[in-house]
Length: 206
Image (cartoon, rainbow, N blue to C red):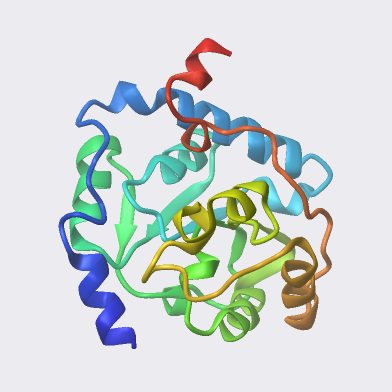
């Protein structure tokens, strides 16, 4: 239920910080900026204006968007995560949902490992589409249910985190979900690497 999930996400263990030093997030921030620049190269209407990172966690993506010149806001239900983002990066964070934004107001909406957490992803995507300006864009990352990790590790894989991941997506079902909500889908596939997805120091070694 929504009440159960809200209590779970408010717990201290869910949003444990990797570091209290902003500089330690530099790789992740810079990699997100590269990611957005690549995906938005042919979408001029999405490259400036209001950007919203939904499920913003500790705010590294909001910081990346702000450094790219957007009027950036993070939406995050955890008060602990919002406080961490404001403390670490000085970014704007709000509680709630997309109702804080007017129709046609948002240029770019980003979501990293969030859509699979939503009880009603179809309804969310339909609402998100109304908030985007003409030519605006969404950049969304989800775990791939068809991934080798899920096939090899089963219930221990990132795709099946309990109780957080209430929906699962493959490349085909993700495309279908967006098309059903009225989006034009430009790309579905593995994105260029960004820092938070690469663990055990591999990002630094590369």
